[in-house]
Amino acid sequence: FDIDYQATMNCAHAVKKAGANQFVLLSAVCVQRPKLGFQEAKLKAQNELAKMGGEMSYSIVQPTAFFKSLVGQVKGVKGGSPYVMFGDGTEVKCKPISEQDLAAYISDCIWDDKKRNKILPIGGPGDAMSFKEQGTLLFNLLGKEPSFICVPYWIFDVVQGVIDFFAGKDSDTAEFGRIGRYYAEESMLVLDPATGKYSGEMTPSYGKTSLRDFLTEALMEGSTKLDEQKLGDQGLGSRMGVSKD
Image (spheres, rainbow, N blue to C red):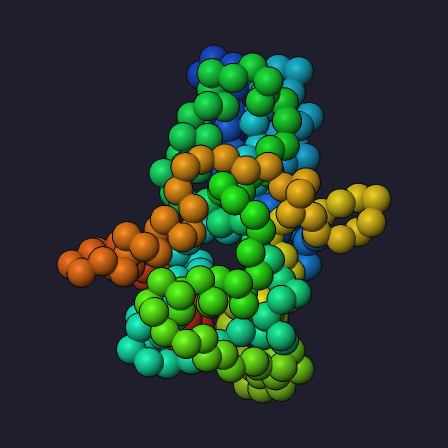
């Protein structure tokens, strides 16, 4: 709450006091179905910004997924490892957007009056892709026969139980475990209010760089694309004390 809510509102009130007439917030599409603390914080900030709409306009941008969240297995698959996915790999989908395309979209919010006082979910170009489709694309680009390992969802119950027992249910580590499960089970697409299901068709597309484009360039000899996408200290593994990547 200190960052996703309080820091956001501190900034909003500061720029309003300074005379700004618009506030553009980078949120996330996952707040549609909040189950985690940071999602509740983002949602609270969104709601308060909306109340300020009469005094200072707002644009709340909700991207689906970033390439850096999806490319963690590229080097392993390139080296001969199978592609790991949860369930059968077809249930969870997303429309990933590049950082450059997202930056351009955020800039558009400043000039495009149609984007003022709106919540704006946004994905990258092309159709929504499941984890299995992403893995198949990677194998095809590498010229390899697809090889998958399907991890059952119940494994999260076991892992979370161990974390909760040793670290405590209210610990940061336990919350990071819940975050991992959320992104393994929930699609990063617009939620259709009529059906309660995620919809690729309802998720707007923007930009020029598709996941295929990104991977094609990243797999070229000498490319630094993958290194540029490392999450570092912000990665889930790093936050849980497992990995720095």
